[in-house]
Length: 210
Image 1 (cartoon, rainbow, N blue to C red):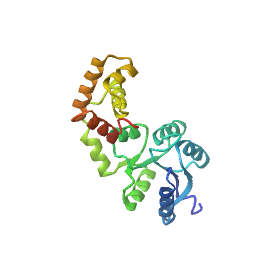
Image 2: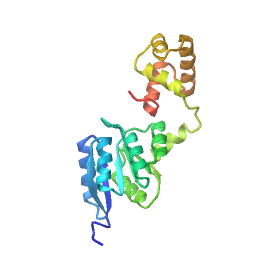
Image 3: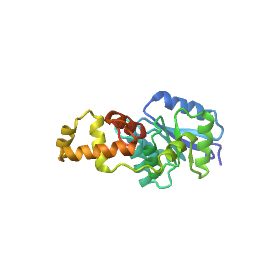
Image 4: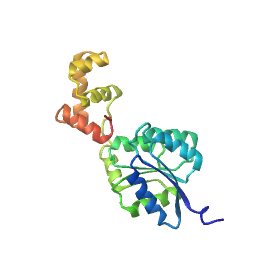
Protein backbone atom coordinates (compact mmCIF):
# COMPACT_ATOMS: atom_id res chain seq x y z
CA UNK A 1 0.00 0.00 0.00
CA UNK A 2 1.44 3.40 -0.99
CA UNK A 3 1.79 6.20 1.54
CA UNK A 4 -0.90 8.17 -0.33
CA UNK A 5 -3.36 5.29 -0.21
CA UNK A 6 -3.14 5.12 3.57
CA UNK A 7 -3.75 8.85 4.06
CA UNK A 8 -7.07 10.43 5.03
CA UNK A 9 -8.33 11.98 1.79
CA UNK A 10 -10.00 15.36 2.36
CA UNK A 11 -12.34 17.57 0.31
CA UNK A 12 -12.53 21.23 1.42
CA UNK A 13 -15.77 23.08 0.63
CA UNK A 14 -15.89 26.84 1.33
CA UNK A 15 -16.70 29.90 -0.75
CA UNK A 16 -13.76 31.83 0.75
CA UNK A 17 -10.45 31.00 -0.99
CA UNK A 18 -8.48 32.10 2.08
CA UNK A 19 -10.25 29.46 4.22
CA UNK A 20 -9.54 26.74 1.65
CA UNK A 21 -5.90 27.85 1.49
CA UNK A 22 -5.68 27.66 5.28
CA UNK A 23 -7.08 24.12 5.28
CA UNK A 24 -4.73 23.12 2.44
CA UNK A 25 -1.73 24.48 4.33
CA UNK A 26 -2.70 22.74 7.54
CA UNK A 27 -3.41 19.39 5.86
CA UNK A 28 -0.14 19.48 3.86
CA UNK A 29 1.81 19.40 7.15
CA UNK A 30 0.10 16.20 8.33
CA UNK A 31 1.77 12.91 7.39
CA UNK A 32 -1.56 11.04 7.56
CA UNK A 33 -3.70 13.45 5.47
CA UNK A 34 -3.94 14.72 1.91
CA UNK A 35 -6.22 17.31 0.28
CA UNK A 36 -7.75 15.74 -2.84
CA UNK A 37 -10.18 18.46 -3.88
CA UNK A 38 -11.71 21.88 -3.25
CA UNK A 39 -15.13 23.36 -3.98
CA UNK A 40 -16.57 26.87 -3.56
CA UNK A 41 -20.30 26.01 -3.37
CA UNK A 42 -22.63 23.11 -2.67
CA UNK A 43 -23.10 22.11 -6.30
CA UNK A 44 -19.35 21.92 -6.88
CA UNK A 45 -19.04 19.91 -3.67
CA UNK A 46 -21.36 17.19 -5.03
CA UNK A 47 -19.41 17.01 -8.32
CA UNK A 48 -16.06 16.88 -6.51
CA UNK A 49 -17.36 14.20 -4.14
CA UNK A 50 -18.41 12.05 -7.12
CA UNK A 51 -14.97 12.52 -8.68
CA UNK A 52 -12.75 11.94 -5.64
CA UNK A 53 -14.82 9.94 -3.11
CA UNK A 54 -12.98 11.62 -0.20
CA UNK A 55 -12.78 10.02 3.24
CA UNK A 56 -13.69 13.32 4.92
CA UNK A 57 -15.50 16.41 3.59
CA UNK A 58 -15.12 19.73 5.40
CA UNK A 59 -18.33 21.63 4.58
CA UNK A 60 -19.17 25.30 5.08
CA UNK A 61 -22.90 26.11 5.45
CA UNK A 62 -23.46 29.55 3.95
CA UNK A 63 -22.42 29.46 0.27
CA UNK A 64 -23.77 30.82 -3.03
CA UNK A 65 -25.75 28.72 -5.55
CA UNK A 66 -26.31 25.85 -3.12
CA UNK A 67 -25.78 25.94 0.64
CA UNK A 68 -23.85 23.40 2.65
CA UNK A 69 -26.87 21.78 4.26
CA UNK A 70 -28.55 21.01 0.91
CA UNK A 71 -25.23 19.76 -0.44
CA UNK A 72 -24.72 17.55 2.64
CA UNK A 73 -28.21 16.04 2.20
CA UNK A 74 -27.59 15.39 -1.52
CA UNK A 75 -24.18 13.80 -0.91
CA UNK A 76 -25.49 11.59 1.91
CA UNK A 77 -28.45 10.48 -0.24
CA UNK A 78 -26.10 9.40 -3.01
CA UNK A 79 -23.28 8.19 -0.74
CA UNK A 80 -24.74 7.07 2.63
CA UNK A 81 -21.25 6.35 4.01
CA UNK A 82 -19.98 9.90 3.33
CA UNK A 83 -18.32 11.43 6.39
CA UNK A 84 -18.93 15.16 6.58
CA UNK A 85 -17.62 17.68 9.11
CA UNK A 86 -19.48 21.00 9.11
CA UNK A 87 -16.97 23.84 9.54
CA UNK A 88 -18.78 27.16 9.84
CA UNK A 89 -18.99 30.50 11.62
CA UNK A 90 -22.60 29.79 12.63
CA UNK A 91 -23.31 28.42 16.10
CA UNK A 92 -27.12 28.52 15.91
CA UNK A 93 -28.59 25.49 17.69
CA UNK A 94 -31.33 24.96 15.09
CA UNK A 95 -28.77 24.90 12.29
CA UNK A 96 -26.56 22.50 14.27
CA UNK A 97 -29.44 20.07 14.86
CA UNK A 98 -30.45 20.26 11.17
CA UNK A 99 -26.88 19.43 10.09
CA UNK A 100 -26.59 16.50 12.52
CA UNK A 101 -30.01 15.15 11.42
CA UNK A 102 -28.87 15.47 7.81
CA UNK A 103 -25.94 13.19 8.60
CA UNK A 104 -23.01 15.41 9.57
CA UNK A 105 -20.61 13.51 11.83
CA UNK A 106 -19.17 16.64 13.40
CA UNK A 107 -19.92 20.35 13.72
CA UNK A 108 -17.07 22.78 14.34
CA UNK A 109 -16.80 26.55 14.35
CA UNK A 110 -14.19 28.24 12.16
CA UNK A 111 -12.54 29.80 15.21
CA UNK A 112 -11.68 26.23 16.28
CA UNK A 113 -8.01 25.69 17.04
CA UNK A 114 -6.10 23.84 14.32
CA UNK A 115 -5.32 21.06 16.78
CA UNK A 116 -9.03 20.48 17.45
CA UNK A 117 -9.82 20.43 13.71
CA UNK A 118 -7.11 17.81 13.07
CA UNK A 119 -8.26 15.70 16.04
CA UNK A 120 -11.84 15.87 14.73
CA UNK A 121 -10.81 14.79 11.23
CA UNK A 122 -9.01 11.77 12.70
CA UNK A 123 -11.89 10.94 15.07
CA UNK A 124 -14.54 11.10 12.32
CA UNK A 125 -12.33 9.03 10.02
CA UNK A 126 -12.20 6.44 12.82
CA UNK A 127 -16.02 6.37 12.87
CA UNK A 128 -16.75 8.71 15.79
CA UNK A 129 -19.17 11.64 15.96
CA UNK A 130 -18.09 14.85 17.62
CA UNK A 131 -19.33 18.32 18.59
CA UNK A 132 -17.07 21.06 19.88
CA UNK A 133 -17.85 22.17 23.48
CA UNK A 134 -19.26 25.50 22.28
CA UNK A 135 -21.58 23.74 19.83
CA UNK A 136 -22.71 21.20 22.45
CA UNK A 137 -23.54 24.07 24.79
CA UNK A 138 -25.68 25.80 22.14
CA UNK A 139 -27.69 22.63 21.52
CA UNK A 140 -28.08 21.83 25.23
CA UNK A 141 -29.15 25.38 26.06
CA UNK A 142 -32.23 25.15 23.83
CA UNK A 143 -32.92 21.40 23.99
CA UNK A 144 -36.07 21.83 26.07
CA UNK A 145 -37.38 24.96 24.31
CA UNK A 146 -40.73 24.88 22.53
CA UNK A 147 -39.88 24.85 18.82
CA UNK A 148 -41.54 27.38 16.55
CA UNK A 149 -44.19 25.94 14.23
CA UNK A 150 -43.75 26.30 10.44
CA UNK A 151 -46.45 29.01 10.42
CA UNK A 152 -44.65 30.92 13.19
CA UNK A 153 -41.37 30.64 11.29
CA UNK A 154 -43.08 32.08 8.19
CA UNK A 155 -44.20 35.09 10.26
CA UNK A 156 -40.75 35.51 11.84
CA UNK A 157 -39.12 35.45 8.40
CA UNK A 158 -41.38 38.29 7.23
CA UNK A 159 -40.74 40.25 10.46
CA UNK A 160 -37.00 39.97 9.81
CA UNK A 161 -37.58 41.29 6.27
CA UNK A 162 -39.10 44.44 7.79
CA UNK A 163 -42.84 43.80 7.22
CA UNK A 164 -45.58 45.22 9.46
CA UNK A 165 -48.44 43.00 10.70
CA UNK A 166 -50.81 44.09 7.92
CA UNK A 167 -48.22 43.32 5.23
CA UNK A 168 -47.53 39.92 6.81
CA UNK A 169 -51.28 39.19 6.92
CA UNK A 170 -51.62 40.08 3.22
CA UNK A 171 -48.61 37.99 2.17
CA UNK A 172 -49.68 34.90 4.13
CA UNK A 173 -53.42 35.34 3.39
CA UNK A 174 -54.34 35.36 7.09
CA UNK A 175 -55.99 37.96 9.33
CA UNK A 176 -54.06 40.61 11.23
CA UNK A 177 -55.39 39.09 14.47
CA UNK A 178 -53.80 35.75 13.54
CA UNK A 179 -50.50 37.51 12.86
CA UNK A 180 -50.66 39.24 16.28
CA UNK A 181 -51.40 35.93 17.96
CA UNK A 182 -48.44 34.24 16.21
CA UNK A 183 -46.11 37.13 17.05
CA UNK A 184 -47.11 36.76 20.71
CA UNK A 185 -46.26 33.03 20.61
CA UNK A 186 -42.95 33.75 18.84
CA UNK A 187 -41.89 36.32 21.48
CA UNK A 188 -42.82 33.93 24.28
CA UNK A 189 -41.04 30.89 22.80
CA UNK A 190 -37.87 32.82 21.93
CA UNK A 191 -37.82 34.85 25.14
CA UNK A 192 -37.69 38.00 23.01
CA UNK A 193 -38.50 41.53 24.19
CA UNK A 194 -39.98 42.71 20.89
CA UNK A 195 -40.24 41.89 17.18
CA UNK A 196 -36.73 43.13 16.32
CA UNK A 197 -35.22 41.11 19.16
CA UNK A 198 -37.13 38.03 17.93
CA UNK A 199 -35.72 38.49 14.42
CA UNK A 200 -32.17 38.80 15.80
CA UNK A 201 -32.60 35.62 17.90
CA UNK A 202 -34.12 33.79 14.92
CA UNK A 203 -31.13 34.66 12.73
CA UNK A 204 -28.56 33.88 15.43
CA UNK A 205 -30.06 30.47 16.19
CA UNK A 206 -30.44 29.56 12.52
CA UNK A 207 -34.25 29.36 12.68
CA UNK A 208 -34.42 31.77 9.74
CA UNK A 209 -31.96 33.10 7.16
CA UNK A 210 -32.05 36.39 5.30
